[in-house]
Length: 291
Image (cartoon, rainbow, N blue to C red; front, top):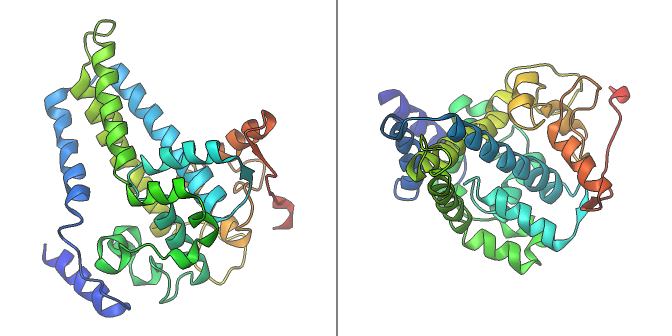
């Protein structure tokens, strides 16, 4: 505990704004982590694990492909219905609203690894991993960073009521578990809620956070960039391709992050399939041969 307190004190002195922890606002974040202990009460089943994996994958895709590549970097275009559906799924990942997420990410690219970067990796692993969004200064949405997205009332609504999609996801998981009881007696609503929402969400949270922390500290740097971004194959594997972070900082407008044939990029593969059926269009890409 003393180490955690010293870490927050150092972070508060190091950066601009009120970077003291907003303990009241982070209660849901802490409670969600604590709820993972419920796995000992609800047990597990093969069905629950598969549903948890699917819940993780769908929302990880929404974060990677739509929050990040689509909304933050405009790496492709899509219609408003598809945009809203995947923005809803991304918000269900419980990483706050789309305007908040995109505004902070654009600020990260504008000030990567300097004092203006909200998760500046030079301030230590834990700050860049999660300390930055637990403080008071990080809770506001910098609307001036997202005027292109703020013109959509449905995205503004999602951003304002960002707890609605997570609650919907949690309720849907409970209902799914109850519906499956007659076919799979080993599962139930509470088990599906814990595995399909709580555990899957917490794991996805930290996988996303690792892009900001590990993705700026460990891995290869095939491109010379002004920041500390790195490429990591295992981070790419758990984040739908986001682990090719140095590639991304060199070619931030590209919908394709895995630039070489061996660089696994599941989100881009799905985007290509969506483009083939007309759900997205104008995918921007670059070639890895430029490295």
